[in-house]
Image (cartoon, rainbow, N blue to C red):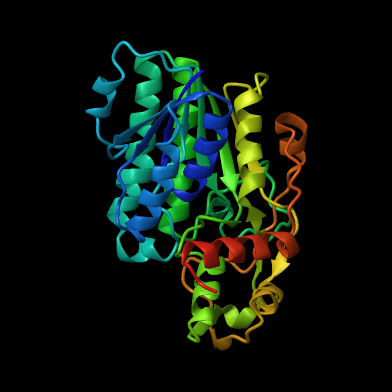
Length: 319
């Protein structure tokens, strides 16, 4: 099998690429190594992937149309589009990059599928599309017409674009709404990484909504199993969307306490109002994912947080 996987140097893309490579699947990894966060982390992920003979790396933006020419006379079985400009808060500062990467990038990858007759297309969406929805748990059957951040709006747009391409060109599209993914090699702009780093450096951690937040933290290995489940699922209709979450929302203050306990350090905390674009709670309904993708998340935060902290200390050479 030949897979085009975008965002290969990213957090989820790296782990997914690694899982595919270990299965002897050929991976064309695409990433532009943008400086949204520390590029050395992305390069170190790539250095691991490059050790596999069945990995080929292409340094390009996914919205770059020139990328199509690279695949002339190459057979592509599946496209997994995980590349995206992430981050709710950053979308308030630089809205243009979200449209370019998330929306135009999705169109460009679907055009690649159309031009090369690729019949299976898997892509990353986000729990952010649920916006301020008060119905818990979040179900894929709920309407998601009221995004409260540009990031969420861009992700909802990727779903609409996929719906259109699947209808017009018979491309079987699977959208995966990820819920707060964490784990080794995680993103430095996310809570697990920020809290761990600041506590170790004796810096204050900012806790929004005065700590009255709940998140459906989902360990990276479980997310990868969900993606592989989508890859194996041959019964999908032309376009279907699934939630990939732990289906067990955790209270943010208890999450912080677990990090403190693992580090054996007390955090300096600054309680702040909720940030624009943020939601107070996320909670995934995964019944459809269990049935179709055989998605059964196993890792609780009591196991996942220590694993992340072990990786963090090893990676940054801390005692």
